[in-house]
Length: 92
Image (cartoon, rainbow, N blue to C red; front, side, top):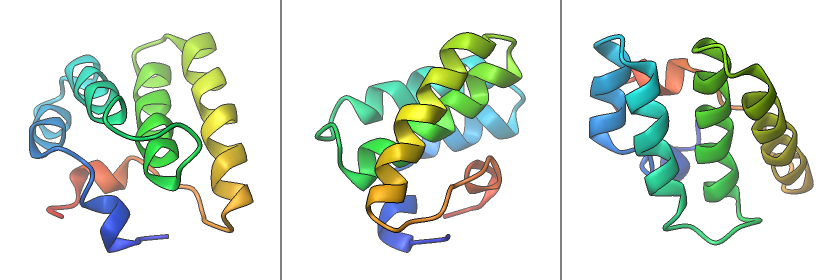
């Protein structure tokens, strides 16, 4: 799934932090962006899923796994696929 409208929600600073190897900072920036979205929406879920993947990468597995479960449920309800970390490496 590479829905351009949803990819546009990813802050450029989060992409930069990820490309620079600062997964924790990228997760924080995604969380801040997610706070601007309404819970239960695809945009919220995409940002939460990416944040969850990053949390798992920095060995915060439990928190990250719960984020993935919540996000994937919403994405499934909307018939959307699951974004992966390559969304952060993409230039938009």
